[in-house]
Image (cartoon, rainbow, N blue to C red; front, side, top):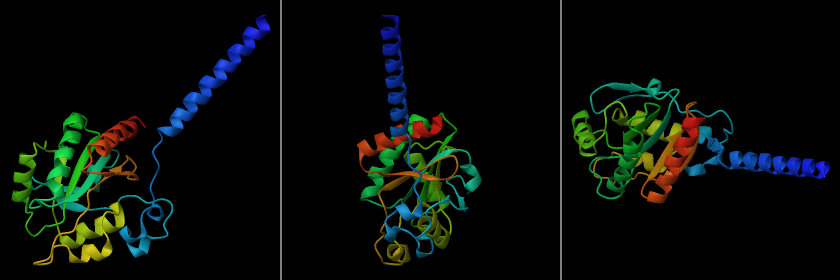
Length: 218
């Protein structure tokens, strides 16, 4: 009798351990490398990189005229997007969704939002300030970033992998259409990409917020 009870106890314990182990594995986000991303989104020089990719250095001005560098997000989780303030198509939808993210996490200094413009000629610091106010962005938590066009596109192509090279060459040209992405990019404390999400899809943004919580607990 006691032997049976013991065996049942061992079985229950084994099942519990297996369940929690599987659950933990299911909740573990992948680390995304250049080789995992659609080839046309990656700068040719990085197509074969399969290990060790991290977001590269940058220096941009935010909506308050403050210089923001990679140091701002080191050791923190951050979400990145590319947009422009005059956009009348996907950007307004994306930034309504980003407002949801900001509202949920703005009290947590371990989560930052970086919104890079694809139109630095028109998106001046003053224009970005207006746009930030329009979206109730808290300074220090949600940065609207502008800078040199070459630097913005280089970062998009070699760090976040959100712009096709052919498209990036056309961005900002006088008279051309602005081509940009609806992707939000989730990056962990070690500057590694952990997920891509459709910023126009509330369900995917919900999933991203869930995944942010996972990273904050890592």
